[in-house]
Amino acid sequence: MNAPIPVYQADGSLYACVSEQRLARLQSAGLVARVVRHRKGHVNRAFLFLRPGEAKPLSASSVTGTRYSYKEPLEHGPAWELKHLGGNRDGKTYAPPETRAVFLQVVADCVVV
View 1 (cartoon, one colour):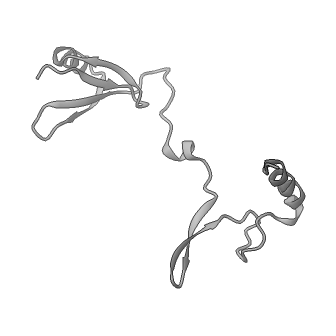
View 2 (tube, helix red, strand yellow):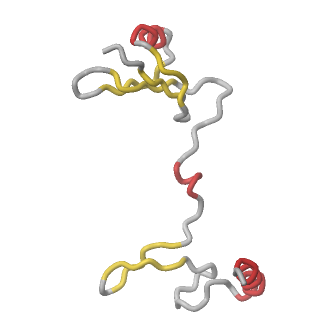
View 3 (cartoon, rainbow, N blue to C red):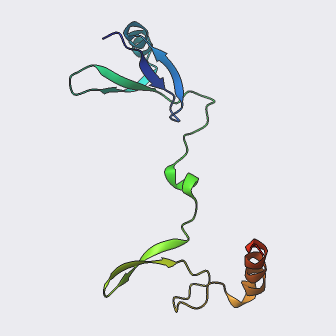
């Protein structure tokens, strides 16, 4: 097969689509960290090593941020529950008393009239 092979940088962004000969040259130069092969043996894609000066790849958790909801186990099964900001799990206080005024102001500003 002479289909171009996608080569990705360490952060997952596409670097280039190359021929098998160019991929062989990249491997001989020691630039390829991993080659992913199809079960039939042909190369599906390749990943380069992290080069000096490049930014480190982002982790999935840094992109998604803080989780504000979680599955709460109940006797009839799991259910989604909002994360309580004050650490209180009584189901009524979603903001601690010292931040409640600011919290309510933000909620009021978000409500479309």
